[in-house]
Image 1 (cartoon, rainbow, N blue to C red):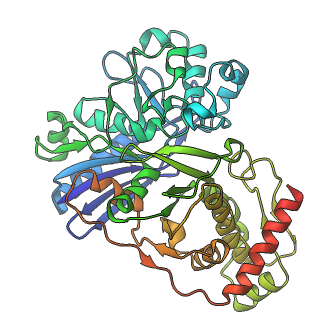
Image 2: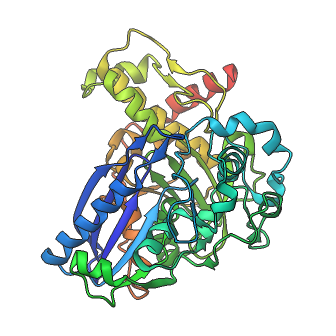
Image 3: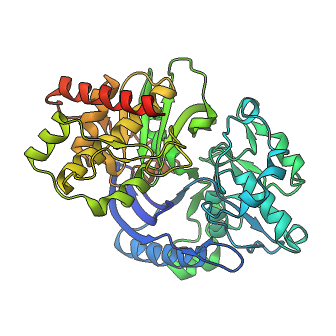
Length: 452
């Protein structure tokens, strides 16, 4: 089966054409996920994404043929629609600081972590805070809104005309969902939106067939089904839920590095350190922790260069570190000022220290959520040999690699083909100098915890 997957990450929007028979991506096209400055606030360029999606579907239909369409997107985003199914207000960029203007008022409404499994996060990372700010500040908006829709379901709805809310997006630190009861949290009533929340759907539900006008534009058959869609980190988790037994964890890497534990050890999650309860593609609560590792890599990569063997030796033996947090305000060390331990480090040394920093931050996230068994790394960090080696050393557990170019797209394609068999992750290469890497990790953690 050929499944076209619209995969909207925070940094890039992609369309991947997945062959579920071979579990391979036949083609992937990408565009930046640009943020428009306003008015009336920073928002996503949904029309640009829409044009990109339609063009990509047209090209893929001619080259390969498309049997079904699936959707996966980043979290922390909901769409407010008017009575005609159009945007009642632009789709807010969750990094917009506006919601913090009303933080005190919002905090009097939001439920406790014990109810939602959702930590209090800055800017618009709690989708409930976005909705609160929008309804309080955008004149006439409350009267215009007829539906509140989760982000993947906005796109599947735009293709089919059927808009819903889905559990993995509702369960992604929104404050809107109670994962223990599998129902809306008390915040929905507090915001006065219980009557306009779109109907609930599961990620694997069929939203409907594409609209006739979409078929005409793209050349796809009018009966082409569109799946409801899934939150991107949970798309990365889904193949392993389908294939694996026993405890394991998945590390989904992109703008966010999200670690999710399945059958982990019992732990008490600390919401102040960006630990939370996600809801996986089967509707089950899943302990998770995350940090903006991809954003941190992008922020620091201008200072690095390809390392030499001598660079590795000096970083390892002289204990040269990158310390958290590069991107403050989230992650396991949200308030710790970070940076290079030695400002005179060469670009090659900084490259090594950066990769090891990202692995050590990931190891801390995995420890916080009680991860057991192998750690399966999805996305671009799976191709970073220094990251993989340090992750295995720091966790003292095996690391497995997913070799999908876009792990989220493979996971989302499974929604469209219940009989597809996900490709197994492969064992990471043997780690050389494992004990020396473990010692480096111990020194890094000691320095971080001493100064925390």
